[in-house]
Image (cartoon, rainbow, N blue to C red; front, top):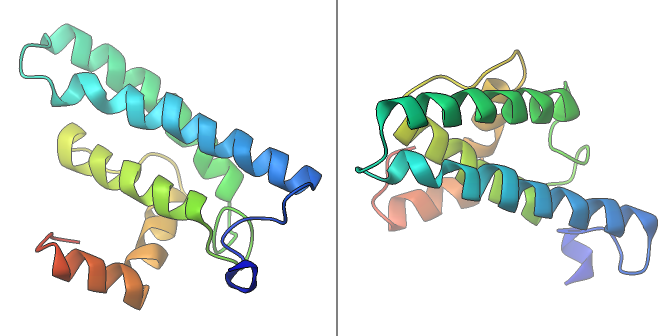
Length: 126
């Protein structure tokens, strides 16, 4: 479904940068959040993990800046994956998103009818 523009066209430099962003989200955020879900993790470890994640989230916020989504006006699968991680941060870290950009970015994604529909279908709070 290339007409949905959920990713840049295959074979382009933009697609390579897109894949790089997906790997960053997967390894630095998604996997990085895992100690916060572990009830056996010490408070010291969790504080260290949060400190590291704040740096990564702040960097990502700067990448988003005032753009609507990570790649401008088009919502991509990277935005969906980042939303999942941001939601996880808010749930397990129990802290606001760092920096001046991520909260408004998160809010824009939550306002998408498709996101609201999924959250409702899964009986999840926004």
